[in-house]
Amino acid sequence: MKKSARADKTFRLCVAQLDPVVGDIAGNLALARQAREQARADNADLVLFSELFICGYSPEDMARQPAFIAACEAAVLELAWDTADGGAGVIIGTPLLRKGRLYNAVVVLDKGKIIAERYKIDLPNYDEFDERRVFVSGEDCEPVKFRGLSLGLPICEDIWNKVGICKMLADKGAELLLVANASPYSRDKPKARLAVVKRQVKESGLPLVYVNQFGGQDELVFDGGSFALHADGSRAFQMAHFAQSTVTTVWEKTQVGWTCMDGMQEKLFSGHAADYTACMVGLRDYVNKNGFKDVLLGLSGGMDSALCAALAVDALGAERVRTIMLPYRYTSQSSFSDAQACVDALGCRYDTIPIAAPVEGFMRALEPLFAGTENGVTEENLQSRARGVILMAVSNKFGALVITTGNKSEMAVGYATLYGDMNGGFNPIKDVYKTQVYALSAWRNKHKPADAMGKKGMVIPQSILDKAPSAELREGQTDQDTLPPYDKLDDILECLIEKDMDVAAIVAKGYEKDEVERIERLFYLAEYKRRQAAPGVKVTVKSLGRDRHYPITNRFRTILK
Picture 1 (cartoon, rainbow, N blue to C red):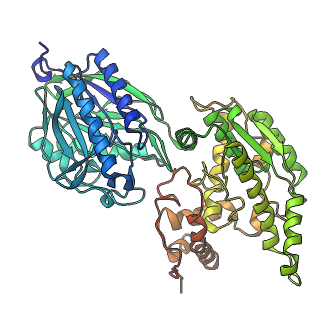
Picture 2 (picture 1 turned 135 degrees about the vertical axis):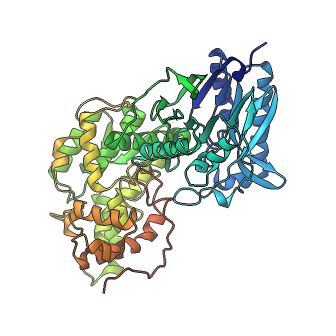
Picture 3 (picture 1 turned 30 degrees about the vertical axis):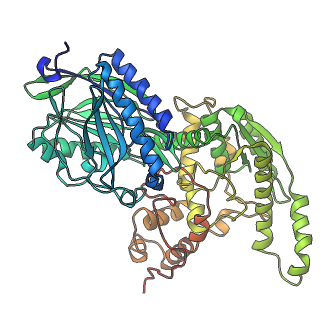
């Protein structure tokens, strides 16, 4: 007969950092079973999964459907029945409906049944999170007994704020804190997680295991990086960053509490490496999880499309990426040569479709209405819209997903054409400022992510990095004809978006009042365009997608008097 974990002073914990798919309940159950089989082979006592693993995070309003919740509970019961074999127990996240109240929960499975349930208490309702719309808060803050060991089971946000849940669990006899998380990536997020866990460990005096999920879900990317800290704050183990991983850790009861013996210590990504990998993983999972075989994008010879092409090849492989040059009379010879050099470096398919005929056809059709008016932005945008129509036609014909390539700077101020260059199904650089587009491109030319499918070395020609950015919709055009230099623009935008600063505070940094007010005005006016933009990967602390909910009709301005 197997001794309890406490009786033999050894506890074997399998940590499952995996990639569940939202709504694929049968697939997620199969994934959980595979992990449990590995745990069984490792002679583990318990396997710990991430938050809402059974349904995938986040189900959003799908969790309101009775059939969905019933399917999740049925899957949990199937997994519970598996534990009757005497192998590893299970802690797994799932939505649970109890007495008419829907909870974000974890269940503890052992001996063929659910032996405990714990409900998330602190429901996040900011930025990308909207849990209070669907779930109700739990109230129970009691440890769970598992094979003689007292476990505290807070869920994700329960450890992020100063609500004292970990300390309360310690006061009630918990010996080890096991935290299921679905914590999406943003820049420097691993540092933030570590700081949070250190605070909770210090306050509770207990070791804490932080399991995070991995993979892309719409605009969010979950970067894994599961880890644990001992009671003294030292790192017990660190799992892989931006990868699936299932690892069994061995814990022993010592004079200073439960201690992980010989825990793995993987390296975390940071800076450009982390941002690039997040964009790549987000694109890969969006394409694959939604069943697309291929992607296509317009390749202009410019910086944004070159980076998107590199990301697509790294994410999917060159054979699944199709690029199309769509030239008009203003397309420079350097754009032709740069686009060709780009596809030569990447190895993907390249086609050229001139747009003179459709653009001039539109001009002729509109001539009776436009007679007596001067040519301007309307005529320029016909070029972009002709390109958008052609890309979508190729998409419809061959079933490839169109990648749109606008960066965060452009989307913030509306420097993009609806039904033109904004056409597409996904944007891997939607949350990347223009200056960061250059930085990520330069980084990729020197580094290849471990699981990237593209080539090593320079994949974005230096000539693209060196030339002035231009939409090439008129002769001699550059972006700076309309916009401030991107280093200035991006800093002002970051102040407005990520830091929520008003005009006066930004002007105090040394910027001209008129320029800041103009950018703020453009930023608010472009909200209607952003509402119609494709989803894209979140990498900053506040993206222009699900993080920011502003009205389109809005007269508020922080004008400095």
